[in-house]
Length: 160
Image (cartoon, rainbow, N blue to C red; front, side, top):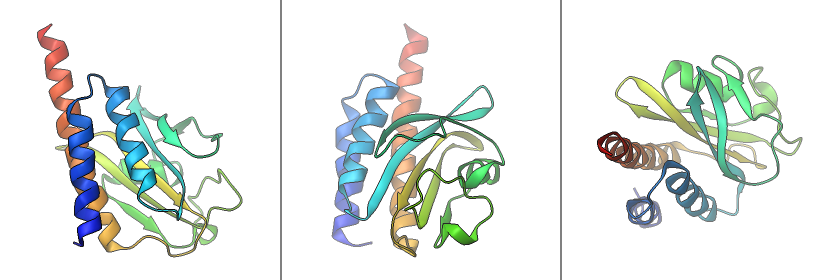
């Protein structure tokens, strides 16, 4: 993994360590992630709530998809399959839920606590084939870091 990717992982870890709530953690993380590349056109989180994915903090244009059922869209597929998905050309993927006519590629990385999906990172690009395996590995490490912080916060709230 190159230095820029390692730096983003470290920056996210450092930034979220001081955040006191789940929304603050996600907001700090999404802003750093979005700043990583000018090629990202929408960067955000969807979090599991009541058996579906609900939009969380994001950077980009407003999305009509504020709630996504499991097995619906690429986001629902990633959550249902509990694995990261890269789509090089969303126009050729029947699962794609269009948020913008300009979106060409997408990566979705679940936030996994063991076998439980807490949510996911979703990033769109207006360029075909924008995401690669190095991005996937980086976002999976970031997802693990975020899950660890969210678990810590949830433990703290139970103790109170």
